[in-house]
Length: 348
Image (spheres, rainbow, N blue to C red):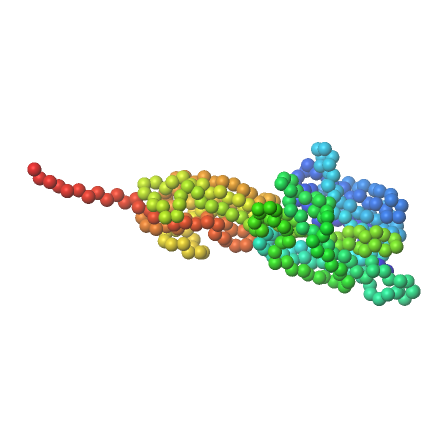
């Protein structure tokens, strides 16, 4: 026997960045009655909220699907779906990372994350007190893990991210919360790609198993965005160079900088030493607070003021994100700007 679910659906549940980008999208919930096939579409004017189901609940339940519709072209995207019925278990999925960002769950390809699956309404035994046989659909739910790389351009929809064979499947047969920890993402690098440069999404679906009244149907989902590890270099100057009259113009090629990060070039006297606070080079600070990683090239000139005296210096390219402060590149140079003149006086 399956427990009764509430007949409300919050549009805030698992909305992807696709729907949250701008007013170019509108949302609606489609309710499909499982017994009669009757369909009802209920529009929403905001990206968050809740509403009571407009159609009465039938014995076999109803499927609620959350759609975002692009106002130009009317292309629709399925963002989430939940099956609601009189005898169904309930479930929620929550993904947790080290990144405190609240709009979506995200992390880097080299960082751990966890998935919390909470289930209620499962029953045990073989029959009810009335003698009704308890099916597997009332005793356990199926959990599926999908990993999908981002396309060359654009974003992923729920349907795209969960196409094909799951990377991992398991059954949850107990009520309560089960936490699964992952040390790294399961995304597969493309040909020639480093494992640290993978980017995509991991989705976790909870499926109610089929029984005599309904087919196997998704009842909960959650996902985490995976972003590549940032990288950068210092060009236009080489390790061991000597700076005499004027520091050369240099470039900083920055690739896959984390969506919320600060990146800068600093200079300090002496040999390289991690965690040293130096002088920030003017024009080198890149501050990001956005939804996606960024790739840029910064050009730095007129930075002689970073060198206050002659001698050896370290030049470091740093980035700071939820991971902490990391060194992307460094080199050492020697500043020799003092001019010495030797002369001999000769009397004739």
